[in-house]
Amino acid sequence: MSHKTCVMLGDELANYHFGEDHPFGPKRYAAFNEEFNARNLASKTITSTPQQASYDQLQLFHTPGYINSVKKLSQLGEGYLDAGDTPAIKGIYENTLTIVGTTLKAIDLIMQQECNHAFTPIAGLHHARRDHAAGFCVFNDCGIAIEYLRDKYHVKRIAYVDIDAHHGDGVFYSFEDDPELCIVDFHQDGATLYPGTGFISETGKGLAVGSKLNVPLPRNSTDNIAKALWKPAQEFIEKFKPEFILLQCGADSLAGDPITQLNLSPDFHTYVTTQLIQLANQYSSGRLLAMGGGGYKLENIKVAWNDVISTLIINDKK
Image 1 (cartoon, helix red, strand yellow):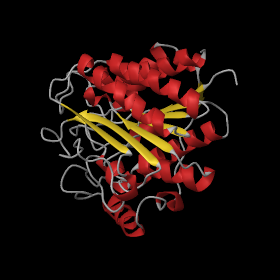
Image 2 (cartoon, rainbow, N blue to C red; image 1 turned 60 degrees about the horizontal axis):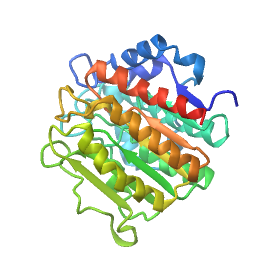
Image 3 (cartoon, rainbow, N blue to C red; image 1 turned 90 degrees about the horizontal axis):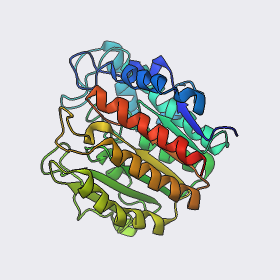
Image 4 (cartoon, rainbow, N blue to C red; image 1 turned 60 degrees about the vertical axis):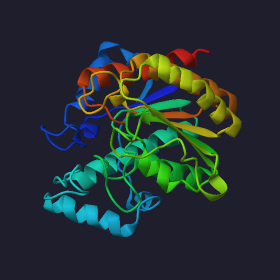
């Protein structure tokens, strides 16, 4: 294995968007890819192309009724898939299949030892629930990834780490009673930002109490605040000894994002990625998948996501 980091690339990923005037617009992938090429990162990584998920793979997480509803509304291309954030644009079903399938292909590459780490840019759709869309997210590739790891590869102990500005509610509440999924979620305080969830008191239910850690950040939080809170989070994950680590590294937690109010810098993404690689090397045979997540200022996307990739590359050599 000459390179240990794989990056999923392909213009098909850019098709997952909701129009020019929507925050989740069509230029996000192009912005990321432009910077990826400017840094010549393809020469330091393995690159792989997108693929579509199957209906059966969607059913690992989502209900058949919801999947069929998305398919029908996608053909019509009218209305919304939720209360008003996620438009049912024509073709969104097929476009989301590509996002999910690409995330699962990245897992296959890691589990089949083609690479240790992988990054997929338009991914991390963490708001969708098992039976409905939410917050620009049609199908929850994070949740499907967790079920896929268990179903295909029999990986039980998984750590899901989320540093997007929005709480990953679709993952959190779908696995709230699952003691074998460790969740650490850094996000802007739900009292001040959609989806209004993810409070410190929420630590899991039933046998899973104590397996989830929510870290709500006050508005205008800086790297110093977030890094100070990371140490206990690192210890929390370490006690869990995960067999696989998923990172949702949304760039909307960076300063200047138009729909959030945190003041983090790309250095926090670099810092978290470095720490998680150390944990992955110690407990997970290096297995770490990073998913781009949110981010609605193109400059932030360009820098944060490519800094994550660069960090994965640097730590390949250690």
